[in-house]
Image 1 (cartoon, rainbow, N blue to C red):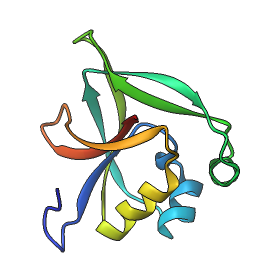
Image 2 (image 1 turned 30 degrees about the vertical axis):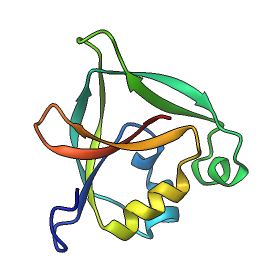
Image 3 (image 1 turned 45 degrees about the vertical axis):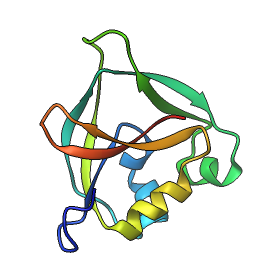
Length: 117
């Protein structure tokens, strides 16, 4: 899904990757993003056991999304443009309960998002 070497990849976040402290810890910079929505998904909370992830986010429960049978369901969040190296860092940050998939956002943009594995 790389757009080009100079434009990066799009990552949609509805959870802790929107937090400045998490961004600084994983990417070494604060990301600038735009609001967007993930249609056809519903959000719940997940208990996080990984002590490094809890230390970075400051939270023991993180949001997680999965595809919904209700077409009216949608999840609000932020879409960020990041580098492929930053995407690899995000992969390393997310615990095994998450998997990265390509989705179409309400804006029509294609982006990566982490959903329930």
